[in-house]
Length: 372
Image (cartoon, rainbow, N blue to C red; front, side, top):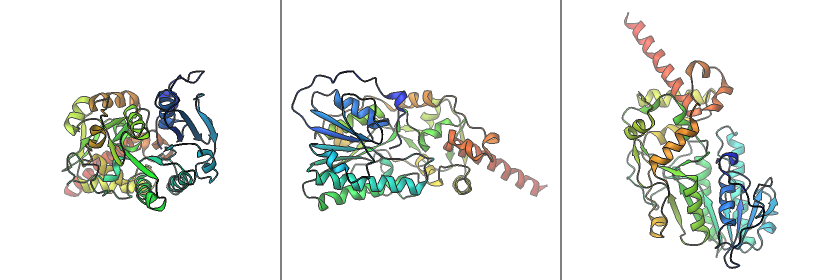
């Protein structure tokens, strides 16, 4: 999945496998060469509660202690590579803003289908999938916080959310199609720690876009806490549908105070309409649907993990501080972005804010001329 830069977050590997007990599950991790997959692989090989880690990716990663298999997760041959594993954690997802949407969906959905089928064929009893709390949808009438059992009301209008919803459907169907297969789904809040998403790019702008009448609530999840939650699922300390994030949330005013970034407030029709047009003509890769997640709450309780004894090690304030440090220097400028499609790669959400501001200024100027 769209995940941390391994050069930023991946720990150096030990030259010899760490000592651990012979008991515990054999765990296969897909997408193990980079990002969250690499972090989790490192964590599991160092755990005394894990017997062995099988790492699967299209290239070999840095973790020498894992047993590597190099192949595409859509290859049916993956079933043979999974034999002997007790648990599979499927993290080979592409949620990159710049990826062609059709190619992204083909990879994400087909890859998940193949892994679930292959796991059942290999006699594996548990698969852990990772989606996002975005599947709950960002809606003005959402409860604060949402329980894990809340209805998934998201639509496919935001980046990658359609893929995540389909993965959720596959997760629900798999145990019926393959009796004996347990599927656990982990849904993190706004993921931070070397990640690059429309929501992290929101903080690259010199101004934070606030849609008039909206009620934002910000809850973050550090990648280290996500890996910790995934390990809980691997070790069967908790199962089912799990939401993970920092405790509580930050109001928009708190985010602005902590970040020192002032807001730019626009009417809903202007913000959403302009964002849709900018995406349609190719100026930003981030569709208008992404803005909903900066407008309305989608905070989760994480009660199932908490009941199992898990606790986040990071607070929202700490994660926001790390995010601001990561994006420092990545500012967007309306004049430079406008008309330069390739420049949007540095900050889709930030470019949207800047361009929306430019559009609003132009609109006001036109209205003023009409009154003269």
